[in-house]
Amino acid sequence: MKKNHMNKSWYCHAFKKTCFVMRIVLVISLCCVLQSFALESYTQNSKISISVKEMKLEGIIMQIEHETNYRFAYNKTEIDLEKNYTVNIQNAEIKELLSQLFSQ
Image 1 (spheres, rainbow, N blue to C red):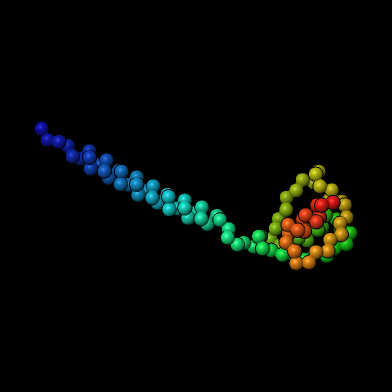
Image 2 (cartoon, rainbow, N blue to C red):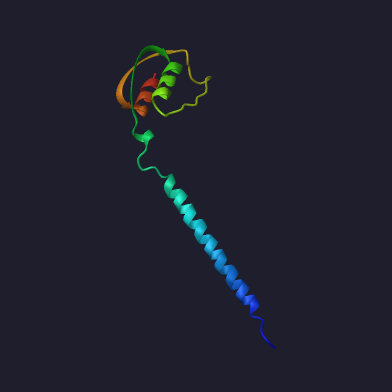
């Protein structure tokens, strides 16, 4: 009786192909994950200078959006957009500006 070696070669070929596909998926996944880490980006280092007197919050937010690449989303029922604010900030980070605006 002869042994059928065709079955073993098929399993070996399928196993090699599966390992190859797994390696490709692993490499692509690692590349995607490593690209998602931001070492230094615009948003982390951007500075802004704004000087306004008695301007509504909505106008200030629109001015920040115009001068930077930021876009803000907010709930109009939770923030008083009709209140007037006076802001005078020079060469500061957005975080500082927003904390000054919303400290009141």
